Structures are given as structure tokens and as C-alpha cells.
Amino acid sequence: MLERITSSLASVAKEHTRRKREEDKLKYGCVIRALESVTGVLATEEEWDARLEQRKEALQQLKYNLAGGENEDVDIDTLENENLGRLITEFRHHETPMGQALKGFRVKYLHLSQAEVLTHLSQGDSLILLGQDEGRGHALHVVLDPNGQLISQSDAPHQTVTVRNRAYGYVFSKKRHP
Image (cartoon, rainbow, N blue to C red; front, side):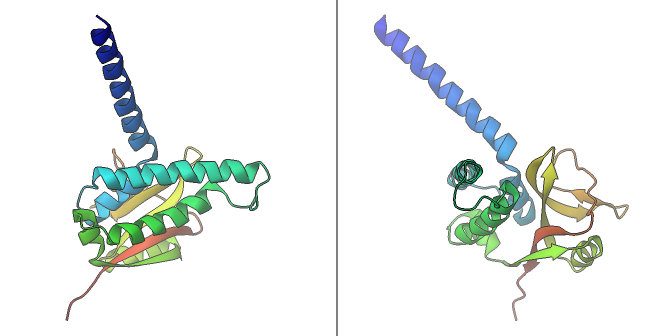
């Protein structure tokens, strides 16, 4: 009887952990979804783990800063912009489909106007823009739809995107081989 109860409790705990992970992937997974969309490959569970751990650390850093830590001016958007760059660099060293795909791109971090976004897209580049969604930092892979509208390819349903003033983002240019 005790074994059944213990087994049942372990099963419930495992299911709770799985659901929490899926919630976190949904809530904080825009960076991975954008990378998957740009590269056309799925991230491994280890890559998801790296991103979710990174997000947790960013939130802890933000709480520390808000409590009077050493850098009170750093906000979550700044941390997340830096985090995406670190993930791209880290993943390029992985012997995974994502790592292999990222090795095929030159990646630049830029501050772009709407016109510059459209120019990069017309040149065949892929872009991940960093912005806000309901007050939270959000990363999205932007493309042009058949009507020439800028949309988020990595969000479902695809949302129209407007770049007000300038947006920070990563430009992915395919490496050209001689």
C-alpha cells in the first residue's frame, strides 16, 4: 500500500514538473521559437534547458538590481538582448541540428529602422527582432507576407509587426561559399 502511494506521489510530481516546463516553454520560449524559425530546425531538450536556465538567471539578476544591486539601470530587455547573443554563440558550438544550422549564418546585432528591416529582408537575410509583448520582452522572427506586410513568423497566429522608431535585432545572413 505504501509503495503504491509513494509511486502515485512520484507520478504526480513528475507530471507537475512536466507541465511547469511546458508552461515555461510557452511563456519564455520566444527566443528558442525564433531561432527554430530562422534555422528551420528544432532545438534539443538540452538547448531548451539552457534557455530556461538563462531566463531564470536573468530574472534573479533583475531582482538583485532592483534591490539596489551593483547595476540598477539594467532592465530585463537589456539582459534578454545580451542573452540571445550568448545563446547563439553557445549553440554554434553544439553538435546538434541547431548548432550546425547556426554555423551557416553570419550574425550581427543591429539597431534597425522599419526601412532597414525591409531592406535586409529583401536581400534574403533573416531577422529576429527584440521588443515588447504585453510588457514582457519578446523575440520574434520577422518575414514579409505575400502582401508585403511585416509579420512574426515564429508566433502563432502570425502577427503583423510595426517597427516604431528603431528596433534592436539580430540579422542572420547566409554564409556564401566560394
